[in-house]
Image (cartoon, rainbow, N blue to C red; front, side):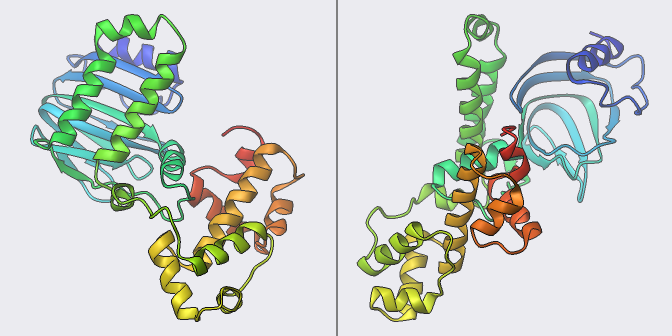
Length: 308
């Protein structure tokens, strides 16, 4: 379809997100397949002609682009150029514009940051206390990128469309496959943790300390007290924690308190965010919200409202 028809369809589906942006030239032609389900979108697109699109508002998504023709230029904190040899991962919260060059075509997907963070938390069995950051440039000759390309081809194929329209389970399964494919194959700062899961059996002194923390999430206990409880030196307990949990004693306690706070918010057993923050030892509510957002990719207020 021509660019005007595409813009009208996009606005009908997703609102007038680009209403303040100047329209592309009339000779631009946009074609392909686009699908979206619960904060995960996938596409196989081609663009005839060169033009740019500006983003008036940031999106809390990460977009992954595998070019198959021409070039695409993303302008954000640093410019990123995608070609038929280079794939891109772009944080759309930092994105300002993108330009399609030399009759660009690509396969791609965009995934809400909270979706990626929540799934990563489930896979690792702990809250994510650092921002998930993907490698911005990847070699498209890698087997991993070829696998993602094949999965997008499946999702955008006419044969699969018949299955997608036949029931309600497949869209959810496809969404999970796309999210897991990115987390497992596109390099990021938690890739090593996913490849080497934590050992299943903890040393006795670490297990005792963990059991105490899990049983008393509201109580802030020092490493020294935990070491005395476990009958080892503080250094031995600290080393054991890092080997088994991959984090420090303080960070692990915070993970447990955040997880219990999330459960309370989801179950509706607390009357406010402030209440649950204080209940689990966070005297600074603002800092609690920052920790929570970073760990789960969603605010505690939204969890309490049932939005996530």
